[in-house]
Image (cartoon, rainbow, N blue to C red; front, side, top):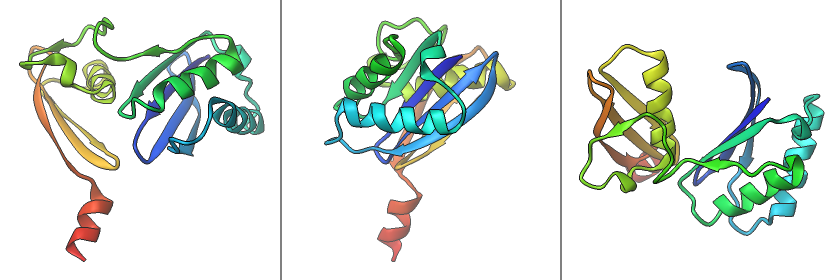
Length: 162
């Protein structure tokens, strides 16, 4: 079993995956003040309730846009599984060719989404991540990430209109 984590501003989504098949998806609130012990307790409770045991994971990977929470959640996963998650970021080989002036500016969440799009969809394609912010990325015909934009998400846009 593999554990994936998408650490966002509003939520932490973690999934247990086996042989490319989603076993279960869990969502926790992103709370910067929460400790690794608190996240570990919540993750353990949720996974056990679903009949899963994080001690069974063979690996873990995380994509984060919340640098303050990344080490906290990585420690929580390591406490539960004995495995430190690989954090998608600069220097991690994903097979994605990022054609931007500064590739390190591209968030791990968008890298992970673009890599998934390369695997599942015909090219070129547009990748849309609708969370607290809406992020849109473009992958060209040759599989290169060529750019994108980040704008306010649905909740913020809706409240500003009201």
